[in-house]
Image (cartoon, rainbow, N blue to C red; front, top):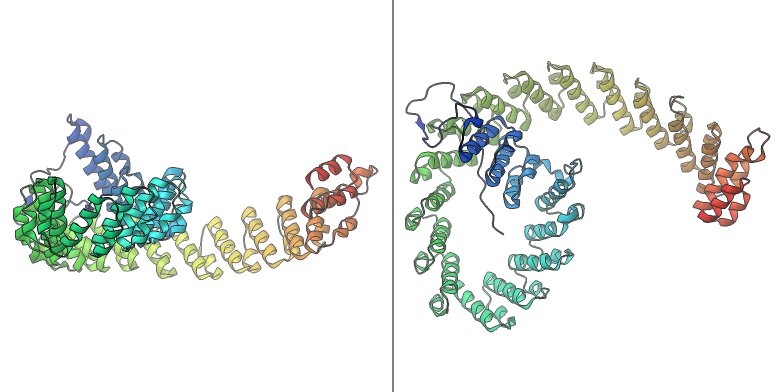
Length: 609
């Protein structure tokens, strides 16, 4: 499986003032017209992609016609808005996985997946959650992704034993082939039924462990020979590469030896140009030598090689081997990684996607949770987003207070105040709904119903009292709820938790079924028929007595069910019949059905019991 490097997307910024010696990337000229006006499909897609990321609007991504560009669009918006749910719209799984790795917070060990309505998306969400949290139990919630999920977790944990839990034989064998070398477990290879796959696995383990005796387990002569050769390569005995019969085999031998032993000279022996340049790049990055990158002819691959070395250097000075946008991106990433804003002021490159100076201050501010760095940002929207990120992340109401936009300002204050459990900050929020929610969040977090009166909205206030009362089994808080449906639910929860049937009677008489349910639950938990006597409805009364009888257990309790004062004998026994029917079926006592007066119900009872 190939893993592609993530491109970090930042907030899209326009300069609010002038900078000396600004360099504008000529390949990224800002669009001044509608994207629909472009007749060229590629230009139109680029326009929509840029606009979508700038506005953090996934709807615009759907207008991108090219699949790869559309995935890049969703990835860019997800990273810009730090919203991992957007990653799940990416079609390419490797790119989707990389996006989730950048924004894993929404997973919350699988809890964030449950509300997703679309089954296929929910399955992928659980698969990612299992991999990120290294928790294979979540794979059993991933539906059709279960086997692939288990393989992901096996790789992440380097536990070959997890491959055994995979149902599909093809995926199971792929799992062993991938994980056995990581785990250094040759015995895992023996679980593979196909001989070619099994021995290829043994070869990989032998090379990974630099253990030639493992090669002895291989039966296929050509594979055994290759195993011995590649293990010797790992111990710098490289002359054997020339003995391979095919160019492809020899190239693989030289590549493996060169990258394992960091021997640049062996890369030059490779015939295939692409593999040769991959070899130079791998060795260059491994040893941190930018001069090796000069051996690469492909400009894109050479730039990638230089950039990887520069960023690995860990200082802005190491980025001097680059120029233009690659250099700016390198300095930006180094600054964020080091949490050092000192070099941000030197960044002067602006494209239609990124103002690198502003992006640098924003990135370092978020990484270090220092909102004072946001003040050096020129673009208002980016500055506000920076204050918001730091305000919520720290949390820091002071940072939120500096936001110009009212909606973002209130949202930031609400989240920061809730995280800091600071009710005073909640009360500074202008928007009533946000202010009320802020107080509710803190009250619920502290289980403090004394804060509920600070909420102006009656419905939210009732939610506050109800939430806390049910958490603490607090009847006093529940009694303060005004809204009927909320109060009834609150009373039901507390009465059944405390097994206090008189409290059930506080449930509104207009909701008799909820009241009956409350009384019946208490009877079933305590074995007392006293709650049942409060139920006038015959069938519900009999069911209540039946549950009390089963709790004791004492089936003769059904004889205590009062008969209804009516002339019709069957109707008079309705409640008692319901009791006998319940205990007969639930107690597996078919003989008890004979106590039922209603002939039809008796027959149904005998069939069911």
